[in-house]
Length: 175
Image: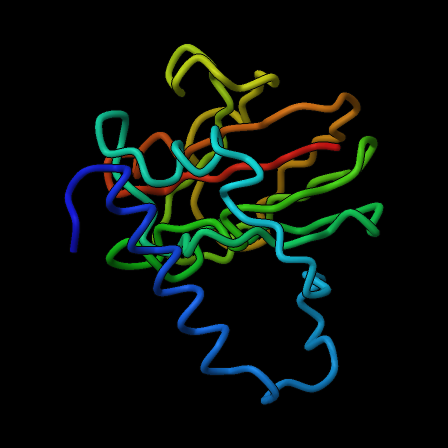
């Protein structure tokens, strides 16, 4: 696997394209993913792409494949906290998503890999996040929730404080 961020992104794009070509014609229905086949990628949002693949600031998120869940048609989007990835239950799912202005994001703890939190702190995240918030101290258990309405266009970069070095990061593009 390539070590520098540019090579890693190129590698991930190649793998993603190969996977899409290999699966062409095998789908059916929308599977409830909400991505609608829009093709939103890290090329569309390079700051989020850099954040999720960056290793100088926290670990790289191994669940991020260069694609975004397209949830622009939804009023509320749920992000699982403690999803499988990064060597255990140390991921957000989806890790990259695009939403419309005024979408409510609900981070929902799965109970895996506890404790977790959600922090959007620009000074700790490339200085590029347009939002700043925190769910508070890390909490364990399932059913813990944190909700935030994203009311301005921009980019949200966030991470889990105790699992930052493992790559537990997320990014949201708000249009």
